[in-house]
Length: 403
Ligand code: ATP
Image: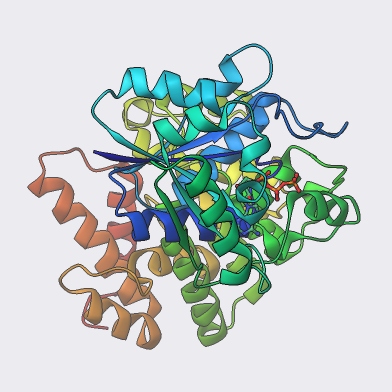
Protein backbone atom coordinates (compact mmCIF):
# COMPACT_ATOMS: atom_id res chain seq x y z
CA UNK A 1 0.00 0.00 0.00
CA UNK A 2 1.27 3.46 -0.93
CA UNK A 3 0.45 6.17 1.59
CA UNK A 4 1.01 9.88 0.98
CA UNK A 5 1.37 12.17 3.99
CA UNK A 6 0.56 15.80 3.42
CA UNK A 7 1.41 17.84 6.50
CA UNK A 8 0.98 21.56 7.04
CA UNK A 9 -0.59 24.14 9.27
CA UNK A 10 -3.45 24.54 6.78
CA UNK A 11 -4.20 27.88 8.36
CA UNK A 12 -6.39 27.98 6.29
CA UNK A 13 -6.17 25.29 3.58
CA UNK A 14 -6.29 26.90 0.13
CA UNK A 15 -6.49 26.03 -3.56
CA UNK A 16 -2.70 25.60 -3.72
CA UNK A 17 -2.92 22.81 -1.16
CA UNK A 18 -5.84 21.23 -3.02
CA UNK A 19 -4.03 21.27 -6.38
CA UNK A 20 -0.89 19.81 -4.80
CA UNK A 21 -2.78 17.00 -3.04
CA UNK A 22 -4.65 16.15 -6.23
CA UNK A 23 -1.53 16.09 -8.41
CA UNK A 24 0.59 14.13 -5.93
CA UNK A 25 -2.12 11.52 -5.36
CA UNK A 26 -2.33 10.96 -9.12
CA UNK A 27 1.43 11.06 -9.82
CA UNK A 28 2.32 8.65 -7.02
CA UNK A 29 -0.80 6.50 -7.56
CA UNK A 30 -1.52 6.67 -3.84
CA UNK A 31 -3.82 4.16 -2.18
CA UNK A 32 -4.15 6.48 0.79
CA UNK A 33 -3.63 10.18 1.29
CA UNK A 34 -3.35 11.39 4.88
CA UNK A 35 -3.79 15.09 5.44
CA UNK A 36 -2.09 15.92 8.72
CA UNK A 37 -2.66 19.36 10.25
CA UNK A 38 0.24 20.31 12.53
CA UNK A 39 -0.38 21.18 16.14
CA UNK A 40 2.65 23.39 16.77
CA UNK A 41 4.78 23.64 13.61
CA UNK A 42 8.48 23.47 14.53
CA UNK A 43 9.58 25.97 11.88
CA UNK A 44 7.11 28.83 12.34
CA UNK A 45 5.00 30.50 14.98
CA UNK A 46 1.25 30.17 14.64
CA UNK A 47 -0.09 33.72 14.28
CA UNK A 48 -2.28 35.18 16.98
CA UNK A 49 -5.58 34.93 15.14
CA UNK A 50 -5.10 31.22 14.40
CA UNK A 51 -8.41 29.41 14.86
CA UNK A 52 -8.74 26.57 17.36
CA UNK A 53 -7.37 23.12 16.45
CA UNK A 54 -11.00 22.00 16.01
CA UNK A 55 -11.57 24.66 13.36
CA UNK A 56 -8.33 23.79 11.55
CA UNK A 57 -9.26 20.12 11.64
CA UNK A 58 -12.74 20.91 10.28
CA UNK A 59 -11.28 22.98 7.42
CA UNK A 60 -8.83 20.18 6.60
CA UNK A 61 -11.79 17.78 6.53
CA UNK A 62 -13.54 20.01 4.01
CA UNK A 63 -10.41 20.09 1.84
CA UNK A 64 -10.18 16.29 2.03
CA UNK A 65 -13.84 15.97 1.06
CA UNK A 66 -13.33 18.40 -1.83
CA UNK A 67 -10.75 16.03 -3.34
CA UNK A 68 -13.71 13.72 -4.05
CA UNK A 69 -11.66 10.58 -3.36
CA UNK A 70 -13.40 9.30 -0.22
CA UNK A 71 -11.78 5.87 -0.35
CA UNK A 72 -8.31 7.39 -0.55
CA UNK A 73 -8.34 10.57 1.50
CA UNK A 74 -8.36 10.85 5.25
CA UNK A 75 -7.57 13.65 7.71
CA UNK A 76 -5.37 12.52 10.57
CA UNK A 77 -5.41 14.29 13.94
CA UNK A 78 -2.18 12.50 14.90
CA UNK A 79 -0.21 15.72 15.34
CA UNK A 80 -3.06 17.74 16.84
CA UNK A 81 -3.52 14.99 19.44
CA UNK A 82 0.18 14.89 20.34
CA UNK A 83 1.57 17.31 22.91
CA UNK A 84 4.45 19.62 21.98
CA UNK A 85 5.93 20.52 18.62
CA UNK A 86 4.84 18.50 15.61
CA UNK A 87 8.05 16.91 14.41
CA UNK A 88 7.65 15.04 11.14
CA UNK A 89 10.13 12.35 12.24
CA UNK A 90 7.82 11.46 15.16
CA UNK A 91 4.77 11.42 12.90
CA UNK A 92 6.46 9.13 10.40
CA UNK A 93 7.64 6.81 13.17
CA UNK A 94 4.06 6.55 14.46
CA UNK A 95 2.74 5.88 10.97
CA UNK A 96 5.42 3.28 10.30
CA UNK A 97 4.24 1.46 13.41
CA UNK A 98 0.61 1.69 12.33
CA UNK A 99 1.35 0.61 8.76
CA UNK A 100 4.48 -1.60 8.95
CA UNK A 101 4.17 -2.82 5.35
CA UNK A 102 3.24 0.44 3.66
CA UNK A 103 5.37 2.56 1.36
CA UNK A 104 5.26 6.06 2.88
CA UNK A 105 5.62 9.26 0.85
CA UNK A 106 5.93 12.70 2.33
CA UNK A 107 4.43 15.46 0.18
CA UNK A 108 5.81 18.98 0.36
CA UNK A 109 6.13 22.26 -1.52
CA UNK A 110 9.38 23.95 -2.56
CA UNK A 111 9.86 25.94 0.65
CA UNK A 112 9.77 22.79 2.76
CA UNK A 113 11.85 20.70 0.33
CA UNK A 114 14.67 23.24 0.22
CA UNK A 115 15.03 23.29 4.00
CA UNK A 116 14.62 19.58 4.69
CA UNK A 117 18.20 19.15 5.96
CA UNK A 118 17.45 21.58 8.81
CA UNK A 119 14.42 19.66 10.13
CA UNK A 120 14.79 17.47 13.18
CA UNK A 121 16.30 14.07 12.24
CA UNK A 122 16.30 14.48 8.45
CA UNK A 123 18.08 11.12 7.96
CA UNK A 124 15.35 9.34 9.88
CA UNK A 125 12.70 11.13 7.80
CA UNK A 126 14.35 10.06 4.56
CA UNK A 127 14.75 6.52 5.80
CA UNK A 128 11.09 6.22 6.76
CA UNK A 129 9.54 7.91 3.74
CA UNK A 130 10.11 8.96 0.17
CA UNK A 131 9.75 12.66 -0.55
CA UNK A 132 7.55 14.02 -3.30
CA UNK A 133 8.18 17.72 -3.82
CA UNK A 134 6.23 20.17 -5.98
CA UNK A 135 6.72 23.78 -6.99
CA UNK A 136 4.54 26.57 -5.63
CA UNK A 137 5.34 29.25 -8.20
CA UNK A 138 6.51 29.57 -11.83
CA UNK A 139 10.06 30.10 -10.57
CA UNK A 140 10.22 26.68 -8.88
CA UNK A 141 11.71 24.69 -11.77
CA UNK A 142 14.42 22.06 -12.15
CA UNK A 143 17.16 24.63 -11.51
CA UNK A 144 15.77 24.95 -7.98
CA UNK A 145 14.97 21.27 -7.40
CA UNK A 146 17.92 19.46 -9.01
CA UNK A 147 20.75 20.76 -6.74
CA UNK A 148 18.69 19.99 -3.62
CA UNK A 149 17.87 16.49 -4.88
CA UNK A 150 21.58 15.89 -5.51
CA UNK A 151 22.53 17.24 -2.11
CA UNK A 152 20.01 15.07 -0.26
CA UNK A 153 20.92 12.03 -2.31
CA UNK A 154 24.57 12.51 -1.42
CA UNK A 155 23.94 12.94 2.30
CA UNK A 156 21.34 10.15 2.45
CA UNK A 157 22.20 7.69 -0.35
CA UNK A 158 19.08 5.55 0.14
CA UNK A 159 16.69 8.50 -0.10
CA UNK A 160 13.73 8.23 -2.48
CA UNK A 161 13.17 11.66 -3.98
CA UNK A 162 10.82 12.74 -6.70
CA UNK A 163 9.70 16.14 -7.90
CA UNK A 164 6.48 16.79 -9.78
CA UNK A 165 5.08 19.77 -11.63
CA UNK A 166 1.61 20.86 -10.66
CA UNK A 167 -0.62 21.27 -13.70
CA UNK A 168 -2.34 24.31 -12.19
CA UNK A 169 -0.03 26.43 -10.05
CA UNK A 170 -1.80 28.50 -7.44
CA UNK A 171 0.59 31.16 -6.26
CA UNK A 172 -0.82 31.80 -2.79
CA UNK A 173 0.20 31.20 0.80
CA UNK A 174 -1.96 30.96 3.89
CA UNK A 175 -0.11 34.00 5.28
CA UNK A 176 -1.20 36.13 2.31
CA UNK A 177 -4.70 34.70 2.51
CA UNK A 178 -5.07 35.63 6.15
CA UNK A 179 -4.17 39.22 5.23
CA UNK A 180 -6.70 39.21 2.39
CA UNK A 181 -9.47 37.67 4.50
CA UNK A 182 -9.07 40.34 7.18
CA UNK A 183 -9.74 42.91 4.43
CA UNK A 184 -12.86 41.09 3.22
CA UNK A 185 -11.08 39.53 0.20
CA UNK A 186 -9.38 36.22 -0.64
CA UNK A 187 -12.43 34.07 -1.38
CA UNK A 188 -11.10 33.29 -4.87
CA UNK A 189 -8.11 31.40 -3.44
CA UNK A 190 -10.21 29.13 -1.25
CA UNK A 191 -12.29 26.06 -1.83
CA UNK A 192 -15.75 27.71 -1.62
CA UNK A 193 -16.80 25.44 1.23
CA UNK A 194 -13.72 26.40 3.26
CA UNK A 195 -14.51 30.06 2.56
CA UNK A 196 -18.07 29.48 3.75
CA UNK A 197 -16.81 27.79 6.89
CA UNK A 198 -14.56 30.80 7.59
CA UNK A 199 -17.44 33.25 7.04
CA UNK A 200 -19.90 31.29 9.15
CA UNK A 201 -17.44 31.08 12.02
CA UNK A 202 -16.00 34.58 11.56
CA UNK A 203 -12.43 33.31 11.42
CA UNK A 204 -9.36 35.38 10.44
CA UNK A 205 -11.05 38.69 11.20
CA UNK A 206 -13.90 38.17 8.74
CA UNK A 207 -17.05 39.89 9.95
CA UNK A 208 -19.61 38.83 7.39
CA UNK A 209 -23.22 39.67 8.18
CA UNK A 210 -24.79 36.31 7.39
CA UNK A 211 -28.16 37.94 6.83
CA UNK A 212 -26.82 40.06 3.95
CA UNK A 213 -24.48 37.81 2.00
CA UNK A 214 -23.89 38.29 -1.70
CA UNK A 215 -24.37 35.32 -4.02
CA UNK A 216 -20.78 33.92 -3.96
CA UNK A 217 -20.73 34.17 -0.17
CA UNK A 218 -24.12 32.52 0.15
CA UNK A 219 -22.97 29.68 -2.13
CA UNK A 220 -19.82 29.28 -0.05
CA UNK A 221 -21.81 29.08 3.20
CA UNK A 222 -24.25 26.56 1.74
CA UNK A 223 -21.45 24.38 0.35
CA UNK A 224 -19.67 24.46 3.72
CA UNK A 225 -22.68 22.70 5.24
CA UNK A 226 -22.85 19.70 2.89
CA UNK A 227 -20.71 16.89 1.52
CA UNK A 228 -18.77 18.23 -1.44
CA UNK A 229 -20.18 15.61 -3.84
CA UNK A 230 -23.57 17.37 -3.45
CA UNK A 231 -22.26 20.74 -4.63
CA UNK A 232 -22.78 19.89 -8.31
CA UNK A 233 -26.42 19.13 -7.68
CA UNK A 234 -26.92 22.32 -5.67
CA UNK A 235 -25.28 24.40 -8.40
CA UNK A 236 -27.40 22.63 -11.03
CA UNK A 237 -30.58 23.30 -9.07
CA UNK A 238 -29.66 26.96 -8.65
CA UNK A 239 -29.11 27.40 -12.38
CA UNK A 240 -32.21 25.46 -13.37
CA UNK A 241 -34.35 27.41 -10.90
CA UNK A 242 -33.12 30.71 -12.35
CA UNK A 243 -33.87 29.57 -15.91
CA UNK A 244 -37.35 28.46 -14.89
CA UNK A 245 -37.95 31.72 -13.02
CA UNK A 246 -37.05 33.62 -16.19
CA UNK A 247 -39.42 31.41 -18.21
CA UNK A 248 -42.35 31.70 -15.81
CA UNK A 249 -41.90 35.28 -14.63
CA UNK A 250 -40.89 34.53 -11.04
CA UNK A 251 -38.31 36.48 -9.03
CA UNK A 252 -34.89 35.28 -10.28
CA UNK A 253 -33.03 36.31 -7.15
CA UNK A 254 -35.43 34.41 -4.92
CA UNK A 255 -35.14 31.39 -7.20
CA UNK A 256 -31.35 31.57 -7.11
CA UNK A 257 -31.11 31.94 -3.34
CA UNK A 258 -33.66 29.17 -2.75
CA UNK A 259 -31.69 26.91 -5.10
CA UNK A 260 -28.43 27.67 -3.30
CA UNK A 261 -29.82 26.93 0.15
CA UNK A 262 -32.36 24.20 -0.54
CA UNK A 263 -30.20 21.27 0.65
CA UNK A 264 -28.10 23.03 3.29
CA UNK A 265 -29.24 20.71 6.11
CA UNK A 266 -29.27 17.55 4.00
CA UNK A 267 -26.53 15.84 5.98
CA UNK A 268 -27.76 16.48 9.50
CA UNK A 269 -28.69 13.42 11.52
CA UNK A 270 -32.29 12.77 12.57
CA UNK A 271 -31.60 14.04 16.10
CA UNK A 272 -30.14 17.30 14.83
CA UNK A 273 -33.02 17.74 12.39
CA UNK A 274 -35.56 17.19 15.16
CA UNK A 275 -33.73 19.63 17.46
CA UNK A 276 -33.86 22.32 14.76
CA UNK A 277 -37.58 21.70 14.19
CA UNK A 278 -38.18 22.09 17.90
CA UNK A 279 -36.06 25.23 18.09
CA UNK A 280 -37.84 26.93 15.20
CA UNK A 281 -41.33 25.68 16.10
CA UNK A 282 -41.91 23.38 13.11
CA UNK A 283 -44.72 20.96 13.87
CA UNK A 284 -44.18 17.47 12.53
CA UNK A 285 -46.53 14.60 11.80
CA UNK A 286 -45.83 10.99 12.68
CA UNK A 287 -44.11 10.14 9.41
CA UNK A 288 -41.85 13.18 9.55
CA UNK A 289 -40.68 12.21 13.02
CA UNK A 290 -39.02 9.12 11.53
CA UNK A 291 -38.22 10.02 7.96
CA UNK A 292 -35.04 12.07 8.04
CA UNK A 293 -35.31 12.68 4.30
CA UNK A 294 -38.51 14.64 4.81
CA UNK A 295 -36.99 16.91 7.42
CA UNK A 296 -34.17 18.61 5.52
CA UNK A 297 -36.58 20.77 3.53
CA UNK A 298 -38.17 22.06 6.73
CA UNK A 299 -34.93 22.64 8.61
CA UNK A 300 -33.27 24.06 5.48
CA UNK A 301 -36.09 26.60 5.23
CA UNK A 302 -35.59 27.56 8.88
CA UNK A 303 -31.84 28.03 8.42
CA UNK A 304 -32.50 30.09 5.27
CA UNK A 305 -34.83 32.37 7.23
CA UNK A 306 -33.20 32.57 10.64
CA UNK A 307 -29.50 32.32 9.79
CA UNK A 308 -29.34 33.81 6.30
CA UNK A 309 -32.25 36.26 6.59
CA UNK A 310 -34.15 34.99 3.55
CA UNK A 311 -37.71 36.26 2.97
CA UNK A 312 -40.93 34.23 3.24
CA UNK A 313 -40.96 33.36 -0.48
CA UNK A 314 -37.57 31.63 -0.22
CA UNK A 315 -38.54 29.99 3.08
CA UNK A 316 -41.72 28.55 1.56
CA UNK A 317 -40.03 27.31 -1.61
CA UNK A 318 -37.42 25.42 0.42
CA UNK A 319 -39.99 24.19 2.94
CA UNK A 320 -42.09 22.43 0.25
CA UNK A 321 -39.34 21.30 -2.11
CA UNK A 322 -39.42 17.66 -1.01
CA UNK A 323 -43.09 16.84 -0.49
CA UNK A 324 -44.83 19.53 -2.57
CA UNK A 325 -48.39 20.49 -1.45
CA UNK A 326 -51.70 21.72 -2.80
CA UNK A 327 -51.98 25.17 -4.40
CA UNK A 328 -48.26 26.00 -4.66
CA UNK A 329 -46.81 29.40 -5.62
CA UNK A 330 -44.85 29.68 -8.86
CA UNK A 331 -41.57 29.86 -6.95
CA UNK A 332 -42.46 26.75 -4.93
CA UNK A 333 -43.23 24.85 -8.12
CA UNK A 334 -40.02 26.07 -9.72
CA UNK A 335 -37.75 24.87 -6.92
CA UNK A 336 -39.55 21.51 -6.75
CA UNK A 337 -39.22 20.93 -10.48
CA UNK A 338 -35.66 22.35 -10.74
CA UNK A 339 -34.49 20.00 -7.99
CA UNK A 340 -36.04 17.09 -9.89
CA UNK A 341 -34.59 17.74 -13.33
CA UNK A 342 -31.45 19.90 -12.96
CA UNK A 343 -28.77 19.00 -15.54
CA UNK A 344 -27.02 16.43 -13.34
CA UNK A 345 -30.13 14.26 -12.95
CA UNK A 346 -30.07 11.18 -15.16
CA UNK A 347 -33.09 8.98 -14.32
CA UNK A 348 -35.28 7.48 -17.01
CA UNK A 349 -37.92 9.97 -18.07
CA UNK A 350 -35.97 13.06 -17.02
CA UNK A 351 -35.94 14.37 -20.60
CA UNK A 352 -39.71 14.38 -20.70
CA UNK A 353 -39.84 16.26 -17.40
CA UNK A 354 -37.35 18.81 -18.76
CA UNK A 355 -39.41 19.41 -21.88
CA UNK A 356 -42.61 19.73 -19.88
CA UNK A 357 -41.07 22.11 -17.32
CA UNK A 358 -40.64 24.84 -19.95
CA UNK A 359 -43.99 24.17 -21.67
CA UNK A 360 -46.38 23.59 -18.75
CA UNK A 361 -45.03 24.01 -15.23
CA UNK A 362 -48.10 22.47 -13.54
CA UNK A 363 -47.86 19.37 -15.71
CA UNK A 364 -44.16 19.05 -14.84
CA UNK A 365 -45.02 19.42 -11.16
CA UNK A 366 -47.66 16.70 -11.42
CA UNK A 367 -45.24 14.42 -13.27
CA UNK A 368 -42.66 14.94 -10.52
CA UNK A 369 -45.23 14.29 -7.80
CA UNK A 370 -46.52 11.12 -9.50
CA UNK A 371 -43.01 9.85 -10.15
CA UNK A 372 -42.29 10.20 -6.43
CA UNK A 373 -45.54 8.48 -5.44
CA UNK A 374 -44.74 5.58 -7.77
CA UNK A 375 -41.20 5.30 -6.47
CA UNK A 376 -42.40 5.21 -2.86
CA UNK A 377 -44.92 2.49 -3.75
CA UNK A 378 -42.24 0.46 -5.56
CA UNK A 379 -40.02 0.68 -2.50
CA UNK A 380 -42.85 -0.08 -0.09
CA UNK A 381 -42.46 3.26 1.64
CA UNK A 382 -45.28 5.49 2.89
CA UNK A 383 -46.15 8.54 0.78
CA UNK A 384 -46.42 11.83 2.64
CA UNK A 385 -49.94 13.29 2.77
CA UNK A 386 -48.78 16.63 1.36
CA UNK A 387 -47.60 14.84 -1.77
CA UNK A 388 -50.94 13.06 -2.13
CA UNK A 389 -52.76 16.35 -1.60
CA UNK A 390 -50.59 18.01 -4.26
CA UNK A 391 -51.55 15.26 -6.72
CA UNK A 392 -55.27 15.49 -5.89
CA UNK A 393 -55.27 19.30 -6.10
CA UNK A 394 -53.56 19.36 -9.48
CA UNK A 395 -55.90 16.73 -10.91
CA UNK A 396 -58.98 18.53 -9.56
CA UNK A 397 -57.72 21.62 -11.39
CA UNK A 398 -57.55 19.81 -14.69
CA UNK A 399 -53.79 19.29 -14.82
CA UNK A 400 -52.51 16.19 -16.62
CA UNK A 401 -48.99 14.91 -17.11
CA UNK A 402 -49.41 15.33 -20.86
CA UNK A 403 -49.43 19.11 -20.48
P1 ATP B 1 1.85 29.87 5.69
O1 ATP B 1 1.72 30.99 4.72
O2 ATP B 1 0.99 30.01 6.90
O3 ATP B 1 3.29 29.55 6.00
P2 ATP B 1 1.44 27.87 3.58
O4 ATP B 1 0.55 28.51 2.57
O5 ATP B 1 2.89 27.75 3.25
O6 ATP B 1 1.24 28.55 5.00
P3 ATP B 1 1.28 25.29 4.87
O7 ATP B 1 0.07 24.80 5.55
O8 ATP B 1 2.44 25.67 5.70
O9 ATP B 1 0.80 26.50 3.91
O10 ATP B 1 1.75 24.29 3.73
C1 ATP B 1 1.57 22.90 3.77
C2 ATP B 1 2.29 22.31 2.59
O11 ATP B 1 1.69 22.78 1.38
C3 ATP B 1 3.77 22.70 2.50
O12 ATP B 1 4.49 21.57 2.06
C4 ATP B 1 3.79 23.79 1.46
O13 ATP B 1 5.00 23.86 0.78
C5 ATP B 1 2.66 23.36 0.53
N1 ATP B 1 2.04 24.51 -0.13
C6 ATP B 1 1.59 25.63 0.45
N2 ATP B 1 1.09 26.49 -0.46
C7 ATP B 1 1.20 25.90 -1.66
C8 ATP B 1 0.87 26.29 -3.00
N3 ATP B 1 0.33 27.48 -3.28
N4 ATP B 1 1.12 25.41 -4.00
C9 ATP B 1 1.68 24.21 -3.72
N5 ATP B 1 2.03 23.80 -2.49
C10 ATP B 1 1.81 24.61 -1.46
